Amino acid sequence: MSTPPATPRTTVRRAAERGRYDRTTLLAILDAAYVCHVAFQDERGHTHCLPTVCWREGDGLLIHGSNGSRMVRALAAGAQACVTVTHLDGLVLARSAFHHSMNYRSAVIYGIFELLSDERKSAALDGLMEHIAAGRATQVRAPDRNELAATTILRLPLDEFACKVREGGPKDDEADLGHPVWAGVLPLAVRPGAPRQALADATPTVVEEPAHVLQWRLASLSPGTARDLRADVGAPDTAVPRNDCGQPVGRPLPQWRGARAPRREAIEGNRVRLEPLDPARHGTALANALVGERAARDWTYLSVGPFTDRQAYLAYLEDAAASRDALHFAVVERTTGEAVGTIAFMRIDEGNGAIEIGHVTFSPRMQRSPAATEAVHLLMAEAFDTLGNRRLEWKCDALNARSCRAADRFGFRLEGLFRQAVVYKHRSRDTAWFALTDEEWPQVRARHRAWLAPANFDETGRQRAAMKDVAVVLEDRAAPRGAA
Image (cartoon, rainbow, N blue to C red):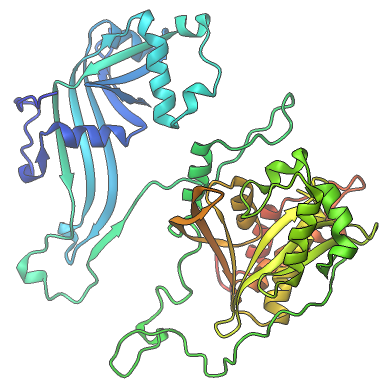
């Protein structure tokens, strides 16, 4: 695809140095867009500019709509069109009001839309699905004959276009450079939010998240969208400690003496009790729940297992029970006295006050239950309140959707994705790295306690409020005086 020459209506005249006429820039702008604006005149001579979904196929920009749409009818009849796409990348704050600006990438395309034939509709709509989420086209129900017949797809050739790009800082007049005011760029970006599954009456159970949804979830938990701003951001410079050289340094900890080592002692809860792992006491019940083909999927993302042989699993328990790091606990139901899972402290760093929760294996009846939440909460409370750690970590395979969701639900923050961090079971693992600090723990602890309280469950045992809803209430209560 060659780059067409600029035309009188595509030549950038204002700030001409920002004009771009190469196809590489155009395609990058279009491929990052989900929405364009289409300007056209209808049959009565009225001018409109309407937003609509767009996607690219080769050297054409595609849009679609109902056959009865005013825009679709006008464009299909050959009306001249002007299509624009804009990405806003930042607010540029200059030293003078006049020179404030914005950083952006924009494209303008002129032309006449072509009507796509019926034979090409299905493939074109597959392209839309792939533009929305890679792999989606093969997972959803394809459009039926009636849906295709009711839909018009239009294609605009990329033959007459111009792009305009602004980047960098403010362009102040030389006389203003000494003016004592902050100047620079406030970056802007579109960021994903946490996926929310829509449950239908016909499919009331949670469906496993496909790869494109999991990747979206990880992006939504990234430090850029999670709480990554320290309390002193925006505070005066005096709030940040500095050394004798005037350099910013970390908060002093003159009284720090390290965390205590975890003990091989039981930890009591209301629904469960965490007991030091004892194969003789806990092995039979754990093997009944976690050995065999039915339990195979529960071991997919762990470094060991799955176990089809009870003796092999019991031998694993013997090794686990003898370990000091990881320090394994059995999760025991208080009502039955039966072991229903295991959990462990690992990567124990007393000097720095850091510790990790791992080796979480819960029986099917334990999974997604208040007892499971309490088991994790008990170990979190032990790490902070009893042992005095400053930092608690949770790490998992980045493709383990259940573990990533659990970390977020328990109040951990995603700190990063460590690519190709581990080789296990003859495959590569990208590790999602979550953590929680002692400064964040009091609010998380209160949220856990409010959710676990008996009043939060009805007579059938169903929760009245989800953990995230409990968190919103507590965060409002915890807002400082005078906060909006």
